Amino acid sequence: MADAVLAHKVSADLKDMEDGPQVTETENQRVTLTEEDNRRILRKTDLTILPILAWVYFLQILDKTVLGYGAIFGLREDTHLKGNQYSLIGSIAPIAQLAWQPFSSILIIKVPHRILMPTLVLGWGIAQSLTPLCKSFPALLAIRFFLGLFEAGCLPLFSVITAHWYRRSEQPVRVAAWYGTNGLATIFAAALSFGLAKIPSPLLASWQIIFLFTGLMTIVTVPFIYWKLDNNVHSARFLTAEEKQKAIERLRANNNGTSDGEAHKFKWSQVGEVFLDIKTYLFIAMSLANNLGAQVVNTFGPLILSGLGFDNHKTTLLNIPFGAVQYVIILGVAWTSVKVRSGKGVALMVILLPILAGISVLYVLPRDKSHTAPLLVGYYFLAFIFGCNTLVMSWILANTAGSTKSSVMMSLYNAASSAGNIIGPLLFDTADAPAYTPGLKATLGVYSMMAAVVLLQLGNLVLLNKMQEKKRVANGKPAKLHDASMDKKFNAGAAQEGDIGSRAFLDLTDRQNDEFIYVY
Image (tube, rainbow, N blue to C red):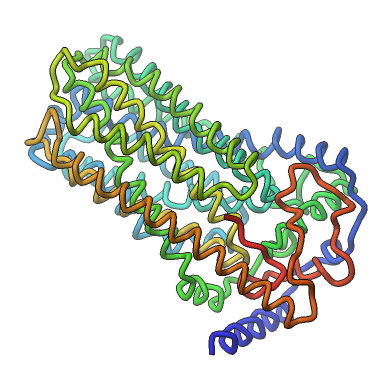
């Protein structure tokens, strides 16, 4: 029955390709590509595309992070927040992101990335810049809603762009390069807030100066993004005509169904497959769990530190080393997962251990000066949380094919992330300050559940590869295929013989393409 449904979906998608050009003549032609060519194209891509992704994601995290510092420097008092209203302010942006995700998945397919990204950045930059005008809870709630609305497409868009430009073996480190700016933004936000809070102003409070500065910094970035970003390999201005053909060839082994020629149609058959795929729900569970737990750091990190007895300025400065640890962990975890081929699931299990240890320390130890050192160590252990997100995102990208399916899958990931961001702050009531023991206890249970979900996904992917091998044998192909996309170096000699690899750009999903190999 499942095979019949899948065959119907393949037929529907092939009809879509007949209705409009999806695979260009360039993609159907194979060209000779050496490792030297591969390195040159990769270097050019890294110098052009990656800095844009890293800088814009840095700005998004910065604009989110300063909310916590705004709370330290008077935002709650000046806007007359009471009870759980600060928690609701922290939750409203994710609520907007959650509501907008269905539209994000369509926009990523339909709107050229060179247009979509600057539009999103301009929108949230304006919202951030208007925050200092807020004098009440409703005004602050409204402006944070619009900030979240424009930020909604950022993470799924960046993930899809990464999959479009990089081989599967290159993706974890590139995802880490832009997602790792979480740590850099934490460092910069702490240093910036510390510096701006020292500015005496008769017109603006410290928190208003912080929001205005970061908002304007985001807005002035917009023309640069439009100038430097390219939509796809075919339109890449930084590649020669010959290099464009070779850039396409080096992506063939990904088998992710991505065609960089004409814009794709949004295929509802691929949407249906997303919701029939067990691994979808396991990835969603990982995203929900990790981002729910991440609220310990994102929204309440500065408040927890201040609860250890530090004043506002020392609390701000103590987040600088935390950001540095966070950045090193994100890059280190991604690099390790590449070195250990198909090691993403195992790496996830390993980095969950220090997270559980850190939360346990914060939960068990009392908040007094004699325990300050171990409490800080426990707090810094939470930096491993951000390494989890890097691995989960690159794991999804490596195991999802089809343009619409990839876009929808990453939008669902971001929706689950938003749901975690909504629920997370609600676990921490100001009445529980400074220890926040009930919230920490709940977070400990969440990460224990996440470890079980990772093990289930590992077993599921092993089973899916066994099913793929049976399909290949039934179709007259070898059961075992070499996954050249996971090779560290591009090896022209590893190119598959005969018809193998000819379906790489047909916009087939991972379930439809029997040559797709799942990554553990």
